[in-house]
Image (cartoon, rainbow, N blue to C red):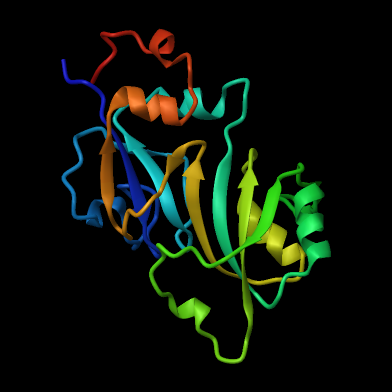
Length: 209
């Protein structure tokens, strides 16, 4: 039997979070890495978003991560146009109505929001270089994940999202992994960093591909 394997990647912009698509899009298979058969993404980042994406051969990780009793924190670095005022930070932090499918509005749950310096590990990006237009970097940590939630939150706060990078899920961090980079993680460390304590009982020792 082959043990399950676990990876993180730094998904670059203009790549979808899947290996197969009927559309003409750039797929995960374009990364310079030989993934084992059965590898799939856990959760998704939209094509324009970048950063931490989990890949694994273990089909039970999705339930363990997203359907547990305790929601898991996800932190994003967000570059937005113009200067963000303290009252806007507070609005984002305490909850802001965003439009959802069907045309209604949903008020986001309280989350962690702060203004940060530009993360030093990031590569230069053309969206950040508009002349004469100031910009602000935010760190936003959520425990929920509505469709395009972060982009919608900053839009409702009257700022345009220029760049969106997922930096971490719990203690599993992007670190200095370059765009398109792949890092394999040992199984026990993978679940420890994600703060999934019951993974051994949920995954029998013989449950491999």
